[in-house]
Image 1 (tube, rainbow, N blue to C red):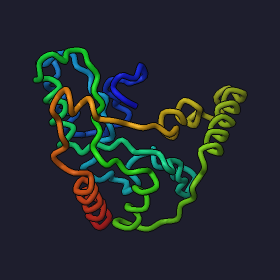
Image 2: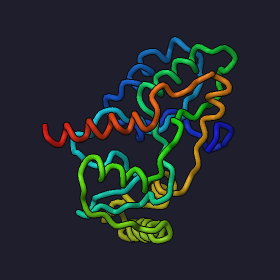
Image 3: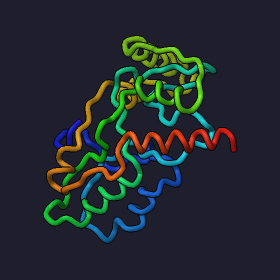
Image 4: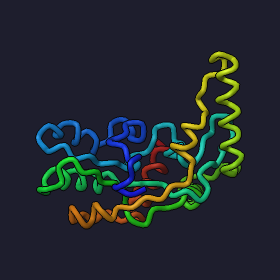
Length: 205
């Protein structure tokens, strides 16, 4: 997904955890800057208090066993410091009013790699990979049954969610770099190291 895509959305609060520093900064200051849109990736800095895998883009444990749904998909992470820098530049650099920028870091990991690193650095647990064709079919069946039962089974899994979270998508931050002169100050490897350390501390708190 690049910044010229017709489907790029503005800030998506569904993908930002509550209390996120970059989003808080943006909400407090957005009225002071031009209407530039930043399509954010998934910010990560602090551990989820439930001590679970950070994002549904990797998988879910709704049914008691972790189902790995992301597979080879790229996870569009951005470290919170990098995100705040990008939003600040989008508001301060002249001539970019109304433009859209993807805010994602370099060296984005695949879902499979992120899950492997999480297990290696935080905790191990059983997981099962569900191929894309199977997960799409299951979401379709769930959606149809929910409709047939008139909502008796809530439509929590459906094709729209599958396309949003588990369809394979590529992300680029090229426009962010060329138009705003942005580069991530915290490399992906360092961001992941800090995140996993925070997860380990949370597990033993």
